[in-house]
Length: 410
Image 1: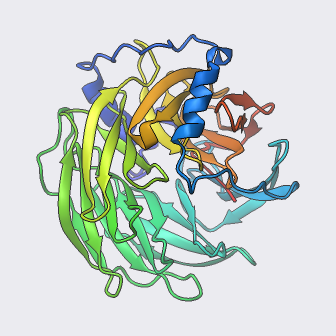
Image 2: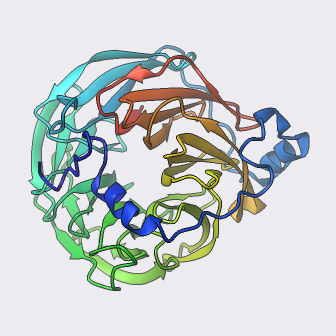
């Protein structure tokens, strides 16, 4: 089995999960702040809701509801593991009920473990998480595979499209590098324009090298940020939008052994939230749009208690009022209220994810549904999101999807 897929221990464990085990023994989880994780969602008081409304940015009003009816859903998996998928899963979801209906598979795409869509909605992109890493473009109108391009590294696990729609950003986990590819007018990918390997600082405790886990554009559009679990560092680059070249501008380091995995920005543009996989914490970060500099705050609880847990992905609602964290191990979704215009996260509670090992979570475009891709149980759970309290309510039985590692609702 290729080390790029990390498909060991029955096909669900990954290279960064194994890396987390090496450092987890020395980590003591922070005590959960009040209210504790056992607090029922009904314990959220009216003042909490008032704070959420007061702190949301003026531009963050709740978007108009999407039309009721089936909407497209794309599902990522591993194709090279026992019980895995055959390509990119195709499905629809009912925007009112959250019910998922499978509709087929886009074959010919190897190990599409993470997915992203072009801003114009016409092209889907997938990583090919293998030793010889690649990224693939798929035209959605007729589901034609437009071709693949090498990422120049091993085990690409994340990709995103620059808001201009002209550049694809990808992160090679195994080799600890980030790549840039041009996107042409038809959505197809050109040859790589840049590749940067994170050669310093030295790897954190229990890590053997750099492990780039995410590559995403900052809210200013001019800076792109790479989250590296192996070096405990978030790197900021300026992207030259005419050449596709990267120039490093700053670095932000977590505490040693944190193992940062995923960063998401508050819609206000001045704060971001960082999920740390190895030490089971989250952190509020300040962000300076003019320089792209990130300032990482103190670690906070994930609500997982004293058990073994590896935070995966963190999201913020479109109005900036609430944040959600996927907890692998604790198998829950942590709910935070966002306070002080994005400067604070306060843990409210956790809810069971109704699955095993939630690798990735995503909100529907209107923010009314939350999807959780549960890797070990091979399911996708769907939750209604209460717009006033942020409470999550399971919509029904989870949808079966082989080795579900990514759910992308459109």
